[in-house]
Image (cartoon, rainbow, N blue to C red; front, side, top):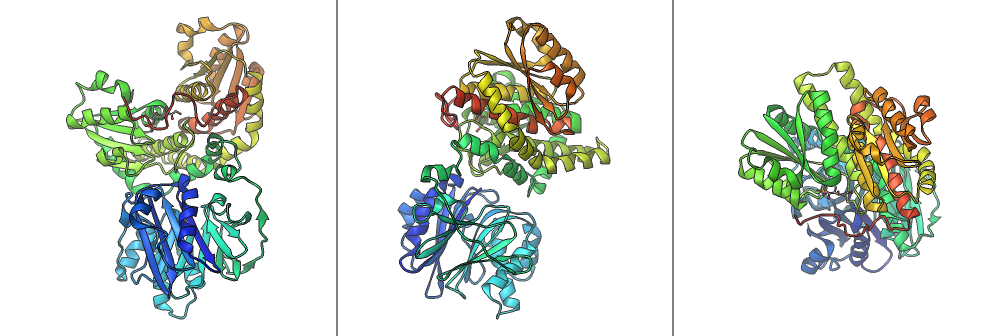
Length: 609
Ligand code: F6R
């Protein structure tokens, strides 16, 4: 997730407007920033790695000439957060500048072709291919318009994009295009703007035109013009008046970041399915050769590791050991060695306990692999190979979208390893890959159809003193995560166990009306889990079941239930089944009068041991 912005002013200086707007988009990414303006048919660029304020102090981002320009605030997905990878990216002649939010999946092939035609690339980004593709179109046909050259380029790219392009050849316009990544036009009295999101221009205009997938927009001093990418036909669309306050706009109209991020999961899950091939291959090769594999993480990331240990075992027949990072050194510090492989999972890539476990293992010559949301973080620097989960910045303190993205990447790794080892049939592999592809829609359906129901459940149990979360098999990880979310956001004490363990002690807590949440996918544990539900019910527990749609057997036992679509394979089930639990924590926090975005005593990144 990055932020793009562009403006065409009738008069004045574009650079300060772009700078101010990028500040308002900084929540979308903040590892590098850049601006390109046009004046006297020349493109002027300033860019660098670092936060906007820090870069501005050194470069003075306002000091660029021209009434037209584009800008970018970056959250690295490909290519480290370095100056050379900061946007805008230019072509060989520096006549074309491009900013981009999204992921171009076929960039390696395109780059290879363009390099063979003599193009010289400066960055490691996928975006730079767009500038060279446009340059190539002009080379072939110098009389082409910028619009036609951009149309040519976007027809060649696969993946997601919101693009804004300027060219010194046509210094009076910006051409934008959209596929999947957000893009919105702002229409002012004396200016038009394009941006990833409304807050970018809200202080200067509240008239917005939403750009649809497959559309291209031309911004000029005359206003805006929308065309379809497919056939360049014109589209007429009037601006809508946005009545959000700037604070609401940053949250896209949601009251809190947490709920915004829960709703973003279909998109973030889609992003995990792009662009990972090479890294999946590399990491699965290391895992394949490893003598022993530790999955090391804290909190929510640890729950992703726990789920992953079931995935690796069931799909690739690889035994892995999920370990809470804060315990790793005590538990394994003496035995870890050159034959050990550590897969460290950390959204921030900066969690002190995780890094301490990594350092200890590194000193003992173990192989370090990383999975993180923060390219450029310490974890990416100390890992032999790392993979980016591509969730974009998560602002709510509680991990939500980053958890499901971790699960998706880990499932893909397990599948890749399984393929290498020939452990499951081609039919099963095809089915799992297909299900992974459709998970974003599944999650969308759950949010759309079940949110209201979860809200009612939260209302019903708002005064509960304690909650139980139970699941079997891989759903144990889901139960742990449901418990953690409820405790940290709504401050409700909660207990989670593998359901089979409950009768070895915890069941003694149960009395009339005690809320017990059961995670109930129809997997190999289903029948036994029904037994556990009955045990609890017989002792007066109130059963809240997360079930597959149409599961009449559990519906008949449960006091309340939430349904997720049917037919989700066991190894992928934590992704859809955790969604109702995230919503439950969120609405319980609201019911109890707490701000879910800023739970007390917690920090987004825990950099002390
Ligand atoms: C819970 C939560 C924390 C983090 C944990 C690890 O909602 O966010 O439990 O998961 O502090 O953080 P990372 O993944 O950044 O290492």
